[in-house]
Each structure stands twice: as C-alpha cells, then as structure tokens.
Image (cartoon, rainbow, N blue to C red; front, side, top):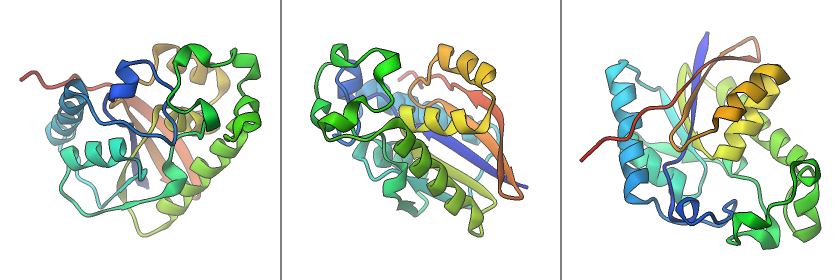
Length: 193
C-alpha cells in the first residue's frame, strides 16, 4: 500500500489581500513561511520521509516545498490551481455564488470545475502509478479540495470543507489497486520565531 500526502501551499500575499489566485502567483508571506516550517516540523516529528516529492509549478508551491525538504522534485502543470481567467488577481468579492461556480469562469477564459477535477485526479493517479511508495505533493486549496471531493462521500466532504483548507493543511491518502482512500487531514501550527 502506498501513501500520498497532499498539502496546500503556505499563505501568500494574495491570500492575505483576498485576491483571486489561480494561475497567477504571489509570494509567500512571513506567516506562509512559518506555516511551511510548521509542516516540516510535523513531518519530522512523525518520522515521515518521502520517496518522491512533486509540486505545482506555481512559485508559492515550489517555495513551500523547498522549505519542507531539500529533495529533488518534479513539477506538474496538472497540479496547478483552477484558472480563473480574467478574474485572476481581482478581489475575492467578485467570486460568483456557489451555484454558478461550475462553469462561470469559462466565460472569462478560465476553467470549469469539472476540468480541474479531471486534471488533478489524473495527475495524482499518474504519479502514484509510478514506482512511488510515500509521496508528498504540494498544490493549492481548490485543487486539494477538488481531489478530496472525488475520493470521499459528499457528507464527509462537506464536513471537512466547512472547516476549510487552511494554508499548509495536509491530506493523507492511501493508494492501492488504483484506488485512493482518504485517511486524515492535519493542520500543523506555524512555527513561532
């Protein structure tokens, strides 16, 4: 049985300023750096080591990964956040109501929710089908949420989603016979400096 740890990047400047951030990027804040250090401490304290590590090519994910480990890594475009089209970098106040979210951004040059779900799931499946035993993937809040929603039933998904995918939250899955099983979500505390 293989293990996948999938986590969200640390807090960014756009997170702090409540800006829509999908394919556009912004740097980690000081809190984001401390969150990544907290995740590193969590993995060290639990004695968790990785065979391979992967990241979205977004700077915020790569920077988070580089704080957690100095292992060589691969980036995959399939691990990127949803593309919000012309809404990228705009205020989160412009996000549509949930019932419109499925295809809203396609009208503005972005992706549909279904496209994101398919791409993130396929990318994780491809990674876990390689010769990997224990894997770390650093991705994004929406991407992590879309992946989780395909693995667990809707009631549990809504319960976890209601608590939020805080920066540097870690989702643990097992992988066996081509199937992902959700194990737990961890929310390590930032390192105080």
